[in-house]
Amino acid sequence: MPDKTRLADFLPYLLSVTSNAVSDRIADEYRARFGLKIPEWRVMAVLGDTGPLTQRELVGATRMDKVAVNRACKVLEERGLIARSPNERDGRSHHLELTGAGRDVHGEIMPIALEMERRLFAPLATSERQAFKALLARIYKQAAAEGE
Image (cartoon, rainbow, N blue to C red):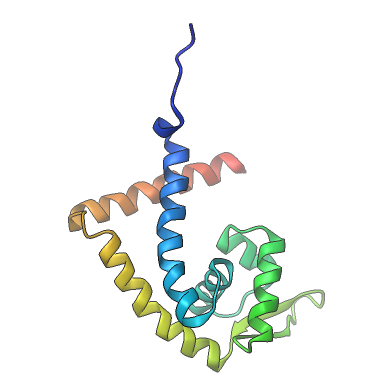
């Protein structure tokens, strides 16, 4: 009889549901205060870190599908939180970047997100958090390498 593994013991499943639970908890805060959904905040967070990107670059950076990125960008642009500018290297695409209002919202959300991170990961010692980040980076690198 083959070894039967319970879903609750399957690491990719545990990683996914834990990630979703953490994202949902943080999203509750910025949805209530700023009316942003998870994909919209992810786009803003990446643009806040990197500066202007094309939608294709945002798809790669956020690991979201292009429909979700496109939808998030439309909402953010309609709200005046991001703006498009021509991509001089490629006339078929545009650069997207935070507007002044977008930078203001980003600046207000980041302390909230960091406080949530502190609370959610409080059960872990500093060394455990550092080790956890390193382990996640190694797993991400392996998954990316296998996807090539």
